[in-house]
Image 1 (tube, rainbow, N blue to C red):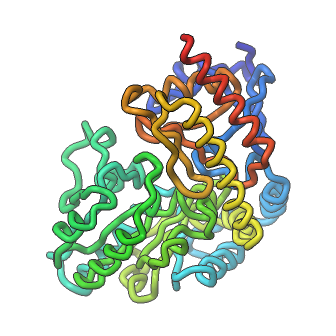
Image 2: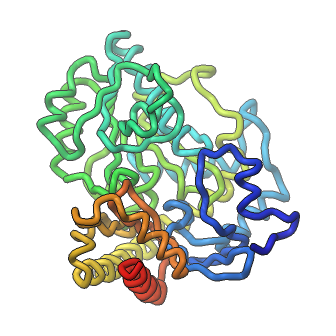
Length: 407
């Protein structure tokens, strides 16, 4: 493999990096829109968007402009001070949502960590230390800290890290009766992704989210929506809760908020936010002026009604493309699920656990797609995807499937 400046190759990863990832055999060195190029100059059509991060695609001109403009002014001042970009961003998020207050940090995991801590603090302040239990769903994903993987409910991410934080229970997603049985007066929070991402691109039933809202109200518990992946236009609404008409008490956002620049937010109401006072929680880099300036520009674009309408339109076209593939290969795929531009091709039972083989072949054909669990091929492209990208992606996926069937 040809080496870029500095002589690094994929093998450099194996030599120097802690092996918590197993990256692809090639190294991307340049990206624009939905296209990336590797060290050897090979082009790929990227429908991963950095796992739903690059909502506006690679290196969008408007965001590069915002970044470079702020880079010449002020990068970091610590939380002994505030700064103009972060105040502007907080005001925009509050004005556009159910929330009254915002806490900024650097990643979805950090935002969820803050949300879970806030929920327990709020419950203890108002109802005593016995109200501390958190209810989440199996197959959820909420981050990589010890607290967030424990709430996440996927044993593969918690194995080997015991003892885990206590008073966390898991129920089946979309199971209202399981929720009724699990949520009692000792519950401080119920946590859910309105559309499960890593768990298999599973949208919540509207009745399920409404039932969770009602149960939380009945038991004085907080409802937390993790919108790290499904929020910020991904399903065609600015935030997913708006699609369902169910407002949470706390919502977390990250990924698309910085279009690749690390920034995240936890949004909540005044009545909940007051449980956090100076010193109860914090962050060194969260809400720094550089990240906030980028997020301001991203949010201005993503929040435009015409932009969101286009997400819905393109999502319908991508879904139709995937449905054509599923219909033409019924022995391989059982169907398509998801919302907006958060979609999945679901493997049939006959090919259980083999989705990764198809995504690997797609990469060889020049198409980058993801997995969600073991049996779903995940499509979370940049929200600026065009018809030509959808057409090319279908062609490349068909080539990949045909090559895989012959292998």
